[in-house]
Image (cartoon, rainbow, N blue to C red; front, side, top):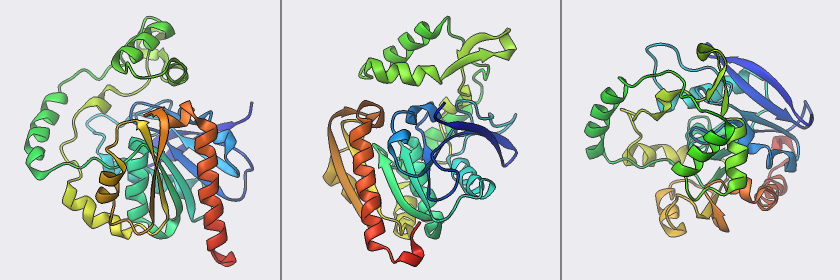
Amino acid sequence: MDFRERDVSVRGLSLRVRERGPREGPACVLLHGWLDHRGSFDLLAPLLPGRTIAVDQRGHGDSSWSGAGAFYHFVEYVGDLDVLLREMQLPLPIRLIGHSMGGAVSLLYAAARPDLVAHLTLLDAAPMRIGPAEVPDRMRGWLEDLGSPRARRPVASVDDALHRMRRGNPDLPPAVAHLLVQGAVGPDPARGGALAWKWDPLLRARSPHPYTQEVLQALLPSVRAPVLLLRAERGRLPDEQKLRGWLSPVPALSVETVPGVGHHLHIERPELIADRIRRAWDGIRRDTPPAARL
């Protein structure tokens, strides 16, 4: 086995982490996308130097669900990351890699804790830009969603889960879908061990408190770490020019498009993505005074 696993107590929840590389020295935390899991980095993490820590965020994979009466407000993921770094006593500043939702979490964390982040890589990720006029409808939608059942959603088999995933994401390459499904389903104790999706159904509820454009524009100038945004050519982000406009308050931003890949670019082309990340990290080492290096 080329990785180590453990559960870390974070804010009353248990978060599962998957570590690779040396136990000491420079570390990188990897945060997955919405409804994904730590295993989505299994092809990328082994190609990166140093210690990597892939995390199941709350409500995902093998981490705890939020308790009764709670909700997955986006800011909770940011708070979890802050406590996780302390609980694991990781050397600071840290490198962060975030895919999709995990990238948005990482960017907000880099704005809130600028001294603790040395470099940030966003994989087809940017914070959602919600206009103030959209908030009332989202508030009403949130109230409706709270009435939905929270029991795990059953699947007949791994093949059934694979079929459902590809039906909902028709552009998802088969190899990507297979990797994602492997860590996304498991036995449901409430149904005698029958297979079900691991993620909390409450994750699919609409958020009543989204980050508006104005709030993001106020937060982003606080980011001090260099930011590398790798945009998938067939992904979910707008063109490079629009992205640079959205994220223009970030002082050190680099945007590149990876050709021929979809939203899960780190699974489709792990060698290419790892090479680009390593080159960005090498640039940091060359430009940073020795006393401040990771």
